[in-house]
Each structure stands twice: as C-alpha cells, then as structure tokens.
Image (cartoon, rainbow over all chains, first blue to last red; front, side, top):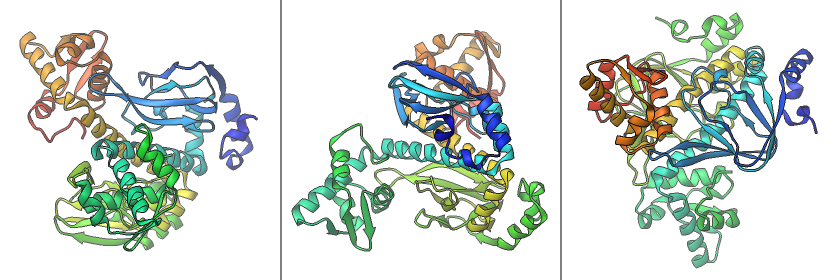
Length: 226
Length: 226
C-alpha cells in the first residue's frame, strides 16, 4: 500500500499537484512512547499514519497529561503543522502509543495545495471539524462529570426493568433522578444518536447499540465518541 | 455599509458567485436576550453580524450556561449552520447579548461556494480555527483553574518589585511558587505572547501590555483571549 492509497482525496488532485505532494514526502518510523511534536515548533509537517497510533494531549495545571483525542491508521494529523492555518493558537503534544509509521507532508506544499484546490481546503475543513468535535465532547465530559456514563447506565437499567429497548420516556424524566436538566439530557441523547447508540423520537428513546452503551457504562476511559 | 463591505473575501469571488451570495441573503434584527440557535436545527444559516453581539454557550451538567466565545460586529457565525461541514458533531447555543442585526447566508449557497472556491473554503478554515482556538483556551482555563490569572499576577508583582518590565526569569522559577509545572508556564507564556501581552525570549519575559495583564488579574470573567 502506498501513499496514494492512504491519502483520501488523491484522485481529486491534478497530476502536477500529485507529483508535488509526492516529492514533498518523507517517511518516518518511531517507536512506542516517542514524543513527536511538543507544540514548540510551528511546522513539523502533517502526518499521515500508515500503521500505529498517536495520542494528542494537553497539560493540566499540575502538569498532568490530558488526552484529547487519538489518531489511528489512515488518520491525518493537522496540528503538527499549525503553521498551515494562521488562526490556530494552541499547542497540542503528540506521542506514539504504539510503534508508528507515517508519512510527513511538507507544510509549505500542503499550504500551497490548500490555496489552489477547494478539494484540499474542504478536506482540511472536515479534518479540523472532526478534531473540534472530539475536543468539544471532551470539554463537555469535563463539565458534565461523566453524565454520559450515568445516562447510559440509566437507559440500560430502564430497558432491563421494562424488558424493551423502546423506552417511553421524556428527557425530563431522565434528568430528574440524575440531578441534571432537560437541556443536558436532550443534548446528550442527540449526541448518542449521532454516534448510533440510540434513536430519539417524540416521547421515546430506542436503544440501538446496547453493547456500546454497556462499554460506556463500564469502562471509565471510554466515551461515546469513536 | 452594505454586505459587500462586511464579507471579508468578497473581492475573491467571481461576479456570478457574488450575485448568488447576495440573492441568498436575508437580514434579521433581534433584540437583546433572543436565543438565535439552540442547536436543535442543523442549518439555520450562517450569520454575519452587522451590529451587536452574540454569545455562544454550552450547558454544564446542572444546566448552567457556560460561555465558550463571543461574536462581534463583522464576525461570522459558522456553527449556526453546522450542516455545511459534515464532521461537526456538537451543539452550541447562540444568544444575542445586545440588540443585534445580521445577515443570514443560506447554508446551501455557502456550501456550494466552498465546493467551488478555495478562497471560501480556506476562509471557512480560518474561521473554524479561530473558534477552535478559543474553545481550547476555555478548556485549558477549566483545567488550569485560572492559572492565567495567577501567572499575570505573578508577572506584574515581579515587575513591581524589580522596577522593570524586562524580567530575567526562567519558566521553572514562575512554576514553582504557583505549584505548577514548567510545561504549563511555557504554554501559558506562549499563549500570552500570541495575544500580545508579553514577549518571551531566552531567560527573559518582557511585559508588553501591562493594562491587559492587570485586567486579566483583576476581572474574574476576563481572559487573555480577545
């Protein structure tokens, strides 16, 4: 498998753009635990992961590492090249969680492709939006103090009691025993729905994926996000 | 002043694209406290603010509103039209904090312009990166428990004691009395630098904007971000 097979919008590039991209590449192998980018340099390059796994994290006030998302095979790492977008004003550190092989794309070449090609720019938009969504989710988890876990637990419990996956229940009814508010439950359920865990309709919550709801309930490090 | 003067990349559009954009517009006035978008609809449209002020917020577990950023005159609001980017999976609520006038851009038209025009796509990228940066900053503030305030206070105090704005000081020396770690201080100072508050060089921190550092120290609702 070559770079062409891993870069998702390869076919949308012109031949000369493809060539420019290939010429800009380097290939890197790092072993588990290596810190790849500590936020101190603006433009290491974009990583496209061939095999392995990267973890993105920030620091708590006491210097504790807080994981904000993970990148897997075929994922592209944008924030190792924050120089490609002016308005990025934050630092993320990346560490290999497994032995990892990846291509490094030159930030200058990628930047020039973004400027020329709406396809590359929109792909970059989607990448950033994915990470943004993950970070928003993490932030809400901080604020919601594992409300996702508690809602999952509640739904599974109700389903066990009522012996059905189709729960006739209002968001208010879920909120009250959990000491929460209707808005929070509505958002949580909408999020669960976007992740395929439940289906929400008027006065009804249908559990679609009880296995993942159970994972969410049982595993402290797990979130609904995938 | 017309829409053309407010839309920052107007000149980079082709004439027929400009026309399509103008044809898609509606103009709206809302009074203070109006809730504009509660996250329940995917595509109200993009707002371009002519006058006034919007607040974007999410909910805490107890239903408390937590402001994540504000939008002012000339700012464009992307997340009132999350349908334009597939990978956005989160809800933000917007409320007018002042009487506000804004144009609403049709999400379909904007989406088609993004697909055709690298300029529009890259502008959207920059917008999203700005909001992303603000949210990352907010998240770190949660985690850092007003470390920004404490660092500002420390720097101002040192400057008063040493009677100079050019402080010969290491990040470690700042971290220790604050019960923090060098990495956190380095990141905080780098962030302060990006906001024009200080200049960081080897073994030296120069205070550039003591007025804003004092604001940060004194006002609990204020952050370094502007």
